[in-house]
Image (cartoon, rainbow, N blue to C red):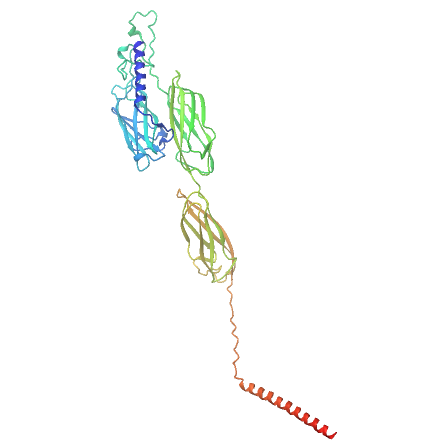
Length: 491
């Protein structure tokens, strides 16, 4: 007991020494995540499908893809491995700290080879990964736990005396809490060391994502879907007790019906259903990381915690329309008219390869209009020149039947198409009604111009006539005057 207390005091002293000597970076839960959906070189499976480090001979290859949302200083992070000094640990304790550079895919891929002991014992052992990064001048740190399954070792039996106990970090004997040493059975005269029971190895039950209906699919913004999700107790012999599951995410544009679950017990191999309806908001987009935290106990009451990551991919629905379409209600054969319209991108994402085409019986557009890309919230005006034939013509403008009706109502179709961000073609059509009429023949009537004659002689005759009138009047007045004079004398 004294030796046990001594080693505990030394261990506490070591922890206090480390805490005073090193500065503790700021914890940033959720800022650093593991890419759980993709399988990288050196991995036997993605994390969502149960990745485990590969073991060949006496070497374990560890491959962990980290994702950081913010830009890190020098595009590098510092990753180290911490071991739990437990009974029968299979690892050689060395420094596996590395600086990891960001790849072109935006992933910090940590890779290292951990040397294993040749006399390792089968079982599950935790590895703690400490990740540090400089973000915006601030040092952040986050810890992840990876469980390693040793299956190529042996089941080691240890006697209960202290001569076979392992040496701890300080060189003192450390009695494992998993070894139960009852006294000799009553009436047994054998020596104590021969009558002690052998060690019973108890493995930690492990929980992992089992089914995910949104794995590899996209969730569209402004929609509600059923997310079928379950987790599984992967242990074949150990039950999980007092299970609490908490879901965490920093994204505010997705709504969840539940964020926590409780199960009193999960039998070995049992599945726990976490399905629910989720709603993506109007502005939700890109990748949304969701972390599941598991808190549970084994049948002995030993508490465990672990985490799993799930990424949800949200896309914005493209929204665009063709507005203000205008074309004459009636057109004449052989005339050229214009179809006018406005293309409006009313969504939050860019649309690509925008096209507008027009077709109709007896109507012949000059060409299809190609607009190209259109940014979110913008619009573009367009027009198409349309030549008018008649209803007896085919698409090439050739008359099929002279006796067929040439004039009357016809229907034009305006087709609007574009590609969304996923490369899918979206196409809509609208109808335009018009009537083709017989061409008008306009007669031009030219009035004959009366030739102009020279009438100067008429002016002279009028002048002479006026002069004669004046002379006659003057003579009349003179004769009257003299007549009055003669009459006065007679009196």
